[in-house]
Length: 139
Image 1 (tube, helix red, strand yellow):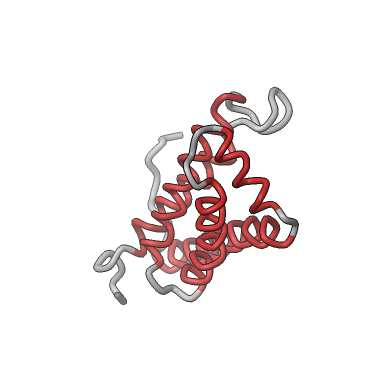
Image 2 (cartoon, one colour; image 1 turned 90 degrees about the vertical axis):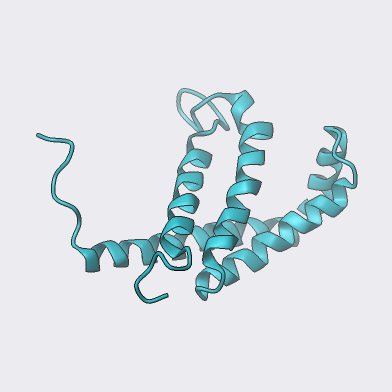
């Protein structure tokens, strides 16, 4: 079996990216809503302060608001690439600060590792690439 087979049919590939965009946006939105509604912004801010970020609560608030606004932009296909790249930046920082020290695996052979973050990061970068202005024929 060759690693390079025929490409996915264009209509199906487009539908798959639409589904990916929607699912990723909803996952990020849920993260922000949960933090906002459970008092997690303050906890996140204290943690950021504890690792040396100045204005930890301000950063925690900004990230949380971005986790609410960015997915709304992605869901409505407005500035989708920029929203995805912003989330990729936030996610990369979280991957380095939180998940990388725990190793690769999220569950099973480890706990809280980077594998889920890598998947989300790859998805966000793919979404940014597909929706970059001029990349799509209908843009």
